Figure 1 (cartoon, rainbow, N blue to C red):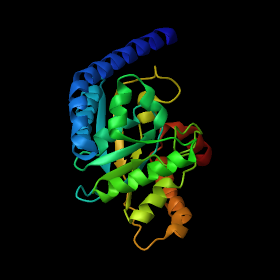
Figure 2: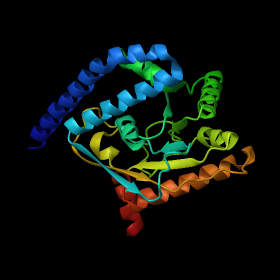
Figure 3: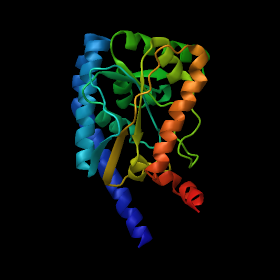
Figure 4: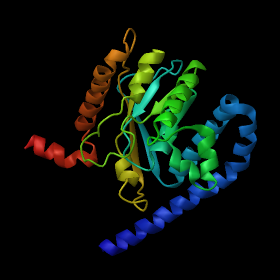
Amino acid sequence: MQYLLRFIQVIYTLYGFAIFTAFLLLIFPLVIAASFFGKIRGGNFIYKLCQAWADVFLFMTGIRTHYIYERPLHHQKQYVFVFNHIAYLDIPFLMKAIRKQHFRVLGKAEMAKIPIFGFLYRCTVVLVDRNNASKRAKSVMQLKSVIKKGISIVISPEGTFNMTHKPLKEFYDGAFKIAIETQTPIKPILFLDAYDRNNYNSLFSLTPGKSRIVYLEEVPVEGLTIKDVKELKEKVYTIMEERLVAYRASWIKQAINTKDA
């Protein structure tokens, strides 16, 4: 029975890949056309295409999005959005989570090397190479420039997948430095079920089901200076960690059981 279920999951995942690729090929000519209209106007349109792409993919794979507003999301405000990075589907979930305001995502430079998808990725993401200090600094400058143009930014403070089985892995400073230097509030978002839908252990782990997106309290940065980066980072980490534990996120189930015992 175990092998049969695994076979079905592989077939289902291949079906998901087919939908993902087919819609990419469908919108690709529009992405090329939009790229000629500049980083702002063209980029905003490409993000709308990506949101439609996420809608189709998640609907066709039976993944249902549920929104939990612990605190309101003010669509007219600019934010530094931060989220927990736990699965391959985090980007489609981001496209579902942020709908009524323009934003740009900080993403890994190596993803831009993927054929076809890499072109779309370069058009929409601020690339970062964490192994190169000068390129990291350039990425930070680009993100600040985006904020100055009235566009929100999205950063995973963990930098990569959380494989620790703790609620979160250690945060980098970048998101919090940018928030303070641009005086832009931080808005944490949690993806509670991304690990169950398609986790980092295997590309062939796709499953249908619910996907809860939780909007946490806004963290203001007015009056903070660069000396407050560590304190701000720890504050946001604690807020996100406590809520992940409270919602009993599946990847920390063992830790919760041990704690409860």
